[in-house]
Image (cartoon, rainbow, N blue to C red; front, top):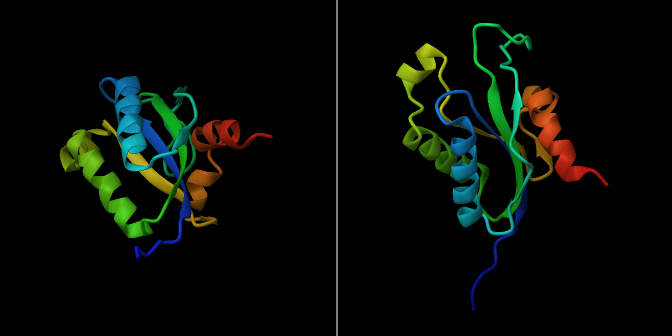
Length: 136
């Protein structure tokens, strides 16, 4: 008899501001669909860069973004480890961070019905995709 694990809703925000931005998001979504069957995603869209203060600095390039929603039995830390590995494979490292380059960023915004990144949840770069997926 196999033991079934509880499933949790997972909401991810993806972004890229360097290189083939659209391609990086599309590839990441393809991989996430393989890891999370039934994953739904918004379209890929462009937004201005947002600094820690919530403003769009003119010196940073715009981002391509997407939001994805899935159901998973994985725990939050297991998912985060997978996402950080995907980012590293896409070229996200300390050197890229120092230059303001984000080849791929994937963050867990909601997990198991809780908002875990409140700042991102309220930002336009997230709301555009999330609202398109959750509209009635």
